Image (tube, rainbow, N blue to C red; front, side):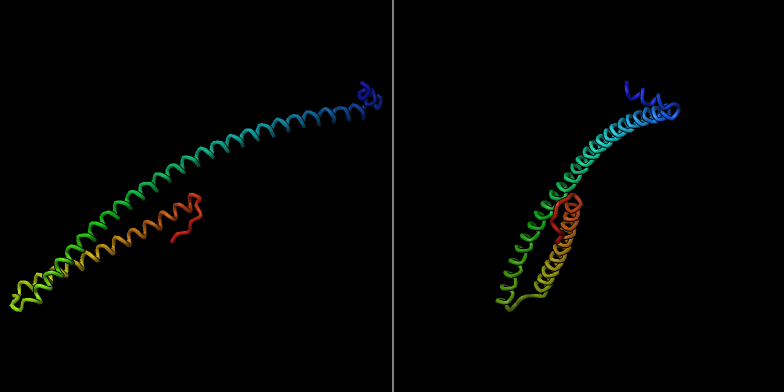
Length: 155
């Protein structure tokens, strides 16, 4: 090899230069191997991170599904209560009309109407509490969607 002949012709300085060249090439091979190994490790970490992220998304989807089911059930309950309140209001209106038509109503009828009105007031208050709870749950769902990556701002 002509390169080694040139280096050997320069004595110990040439031998030292040959050693430095050999050392440089070996270190470069090591560095290349380390970089390849590091990139392989990074790729494994990325794969693990993707798997973890998918599992987290599935869990959040389950939670959101449960909240949606609960919300539907609460809405049905509110609908039923509103229908009951409507029926009660019709009864109260009928009884009030009958009460106004009849002049000989007794004190018992007045107490009954008062109880009905009180019941209606309590049911309306209960419905207001349910609506507030639904609003709060919707805010939580919107925050979960934001954390999940959706861009819908909370209402």
